[in-house]
Length: 373
Image 1 (cartoon, rainbow, N blue to C red):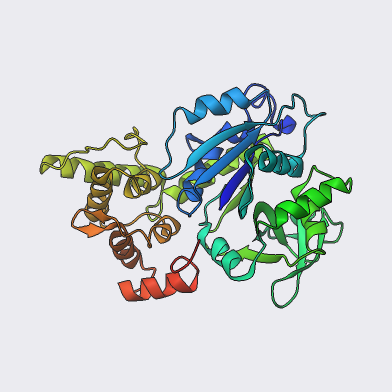
Image 2: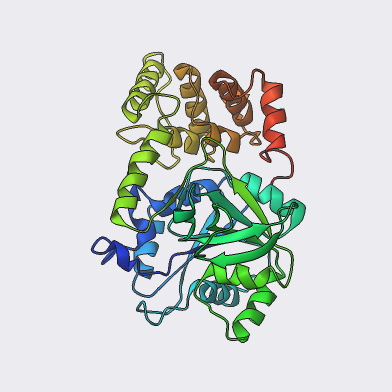
């Protein structure tokens, strides 16, 4: 499976911030939005990621790629050749451009580059493997907010039977959030769609057409820790930063308490002769976070995995539930155990389930284990 991240917009509503910086590279909680997205993609079976952008911002993404590393992901910047908001190809035009330029003919995960979410992609991909073309949905909470998004109507089998962009009277508050997983055959259907002169600009308008050609299903996120942010305005960007820091601090009362506990755990390990030794990215930040620990838990560097496992043990409290669920199927060794065993033990301590067996059973039911992707 390939992944295309749509980053070719000009984000005029976020100016002046986006005058010289593409929206996906704006920072939330100290890191670019795109890095948060790729954190989740890196925990799936996706191997190649195509970041499609425009001529104005292609250099920004190329310079950014030189500074980051995601285990197992091959990152590619694709310049679609456009220079202004007026001559852009549109979201589906960009998908077709990438597919033609790189000869893509496999299943594809498409993500809007301004998407910020806390949930795992694995259950969505499990549903896709089981049923076929699947779009991610999120309950936005009110009809007023739902009017701003694409709203599907689902039958009792969760099949899309209608789809309306920005409806005056939304049929529900379950909105499409710019994450789509399509079978390889959809590449040909997209060519047919664009050849017919239909709009290349909106991913939702393509869904509106596609569900009439072939089955499309909806998968809804809604657990307590499932949070999605629409980054469209300066105020939404600020709110996302505040809420993201709170999410990363779980199960501590605030980010400062979480960072303090992690720093104390690291100091204890250093005092007994277990210093932080690892060549993996990211390097140790001034303020450690659970995302920092999990990125080391899944790193290629064995020393990084041992370090993260030891810190988990010293903390006595685990990282956020969704991070740990994402690594439950990782059997690489770490500090006398394995990544998956460390995650399962941490989930028990957090109260996700009362035993490791129950953790695995519950995780399998939710699509985190087995043939997830």
